[in-house]
Image (cartoon, rainbow, N blue to C red; front, side, top):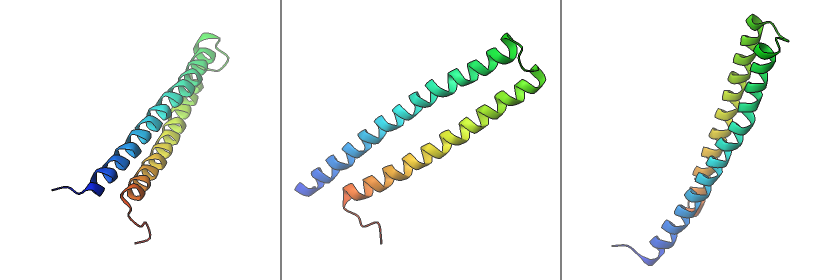
Amino acid sequence: MSHAGDSSVHARVKAVEKDYLARQTRLFVTFALIEGPVLLLGAVLIYGFELIDPEVGIWLLVAVAVIGGGLLSMMLLRLIRGRMQAIDRARGENPLF
């Protein structure tokens, strides 16, 4: 049997989850809108205009992709930690214990 306070806690948790889902979606879209053109520009400079030797240029593209992947991972971990803390606060749990 549920109490009246349970529904408000549940509603707060649902609101936090909805907010963080929107944040995560914005993060992915923003990352894709930045990383995609950077990789495309690199490919055009390397293979289209041949400003950089393709044997070296492929490593530059790999480096950009690896750095981008690392940044995306760090941002996702930060978002996940923030979500967990917000859910704990919505439930009324004390983060010190």
